[in-house]
Length: 107
Length: 124
Image (cartoon, rainbow over all chains, first blue to last red; front, side):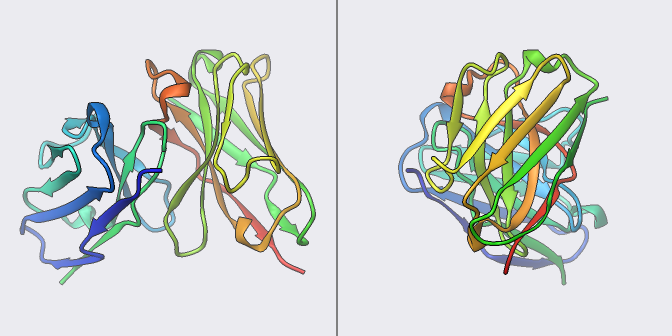
């Protein structure tokens, strides 16, 4: 089973700042099958990125994903007020596992 | 517009059973694999089970294998999860999710759309 470890646990930033979230896999991910989801309080997750770097439909271009192998990054170039949320990475291959989440909170 | 509406959650005693349902609309239900994903209160996401569009192939996490059964009725656009021998650690918000098209369910699960969830509480 592939284990995904996200860091940091919490990121305290101000609107307009850049957010960099990390997701590390316990073994190399074949075909870059890594997705990122955003979850706001009381809402279901929303798909942001798949294939490590492809934005899902309707996702603003301030969200970008990068990485390969075992190390992946979600970058939010300039935080908008609506971006403060919890972010999860997921290996959507056969392990279907999620990371434990990174909370992006207002500083 | 894709809509997924879960129901059937509630309070159940340890060892008991519960059946969750998900009513789907806004897409050709039989063309998509579907899944259940759960989230314990204040915790992260955990994939539970997936089923192919035809219903002929099913997949389960190790934590629920042998206790939960996923099924679907394509004539009614409904997904179900029969949960037996429930444990305290099964308590969670259960989400119904539509798998992304083009990815064989045997190869994994990417979730394009999610319902709002139905809450399962396991307590005596």
